[in-house]
Amino acid sequence: MSVLQSRWAEQPGAMLEQVQRMLDRASRPGYAHLYGQAEKQLSVPVHNDSERMLVWLLWAEVEQHQHNFDSALSALGRVFESDSTHVEARLMAARIRLIQGEYEQARQHCLALIGNTDLLTASICALEVASYRGSLKSSYQQLTALVARQGVPEDARGAWVVQMLADMALRLEQAEEAAHWLDQRFSNANVSYLLQWADAQLALAQFEVVMRRLEPIVDAAPAVDDSLALRLALAEKALEGRKWQDYIASRMTLRVQREDTEHAADLARYYLHLEPNPEKALHWAEVNWESAREHADRQLLLQARNGVKKPSPDGESE
Image (cartoon, rainbow, N blue to C red; front, top):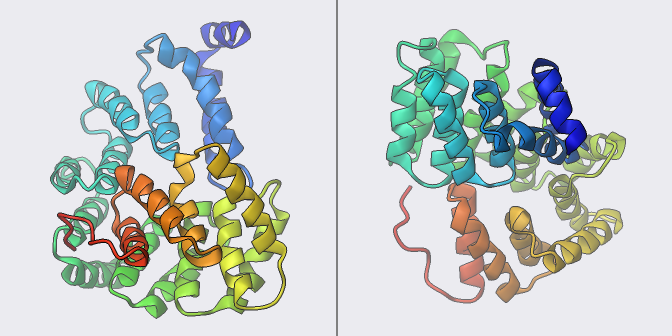
C-alpha cells in the first residue's frame, strides 16, 4: 500500500489511466480479476477522499460490478457534486436504480440528460425506464422505430442499444427477435453481452449454436468466467459430454462454501436447472432479489418459489 500511495502522490494522472485500461479490459471474457486489481488501486485515492471526479466515476464502475450498488450510487453522488450534467454518471445511476427497482429515481436521472446529451441517448434511457413502469410493449415499439429511423449507433452506444432492444424482446417472450438483435454486435462482445446472447439462444433451445459459438470464446480466454461456463453447461446438458457440467459443479460448490452473494443468480440457476435442489434454489434466488430486481431476477425468484410452492414476491408489476 505504501508503494501505491507513493505512485498516486507522484503520478495521479498516470495511475488513473492505468485503472481505466484495467476496467476497459475487465469486462471482456477472462479478465474479471482486473476488477479486483482496479479496486485495490483506487482504494488509495478513495480513502484519501480524492477530489478528482474520475476517481469516483471509476470507483462507481467497480462497485457496480461487485453489486455494491449503494456504494456505487454514493460515488456517483460525488461525481454530480462536480458536474451535475455528467452523462456517463447519469446513465450509470439510472441503470443502478433500475436494478434496485427504484423506477422513479431512474427516470429522474434520465430527465437530467435532456439538453446535456444527444436526443437519442436521452430517449433510449427514458424508454428503458418506461419499459419497467408498465409500458414495455410501447417502449419496445418506440425504440425499434427510433433505431429504424436513425440506425444502430456505430460508436460504443451501439452495443448498449442492441442489448436494450434484446432485453425488451426477451421480456415480451420474443426470443427470436432478441437473438436477431444480439447477433449484430456479437464479435468482440463483452461478458454481459455474451450472457444475454446465450440466454436468448437457450430460450430458443439452440444448444448446439451456444456450444459452437460461445465455447471457443471461453476456451480462448485467459480465465473462465463462471457465468459463461454456466450457460455452456446448460447447453451441454441437452447434448453430450460433461466438460462444462463438471466444471461448473466444482465452481458452484466453492461459491456456496464462500457464501458468494455476488454470484447468487448463477447459484439459483444452477440449483434450478443443473443440480435441482428447490430449497437451495430459493435461498439463492432470494439472496439475489435483495439487491437485484430486474425482470430476469424476478423470473428467477418466481421459478424458485414455484419449486417449493410458495407465493410469488409481493409488490411486483411489469
